[in-house]
Image (cartoon, rainbow, N blue to C red; front, side, top):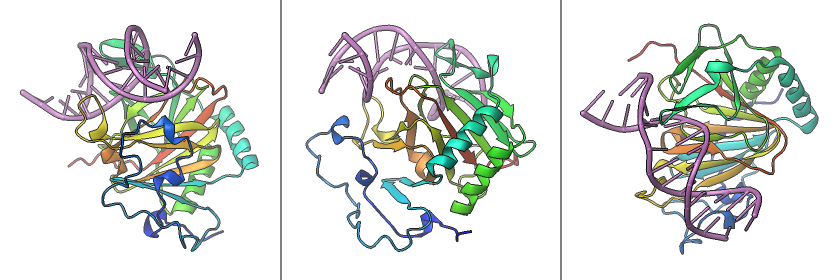
Length: 262
DNA sequence: GTATCCACAGCTCT
DNA sequence: CAGAGCTGTGGATA
């Protein structure tokens, strides 16, 4: 097929505004609205179409944040993959789908499943589960992501959000069992949802810094690559969107390091 | 010892 | 008002 695209290796930069399509007014802005971030030389939307095929990547950059976004699957293909996943994927239920927060037990507000190479495990909020063997569709999507990015993955976390009420709170992905040099590849199928990054130093009441959140919309068939060191400095969340009535399936492909430990 | 993680109620803001 | 966004809430885990 096509030659690999290695987004992180080509120098292409767009402002994060280029991909933040939602109205700026949604962001709480102080007087420094049009001040460009310090030490940020993003201004050239110029000759960046050096190679535009097959996937037009959009670079998303901020201080300590480095992502690439692209439409990986056309609508018909994405529709088909979504249907197949709806038939194939088996999600956790019962105790495995619960989490304890501030002393109370809740069902997580989405469905989750874990697939990957034999013997791999995934830990979510204290609960460790082993990966189910790859399904045909998950393998096919994994290989498509590898062809496009040049990265290989041995694990995928599947999250299904039945509608806009299902969501995921702000978090970073657990670095302990992840290969810190491997990007996380997030494939979205189904309903488009907002996706929000917030810098770790800009959270909470007495945040020491004012750093604008980075907001994206993850479209049907899209691929978002989160490159290091994004997960060190930025939390991300999938907030509630009450107007969204249709389901979304998200696949986050990762590389898990075998428990060699330091 | 200690830093991090999770989701929700309750509140404000628009 | 309704939706979105922010804050306070603690026991488990590494």
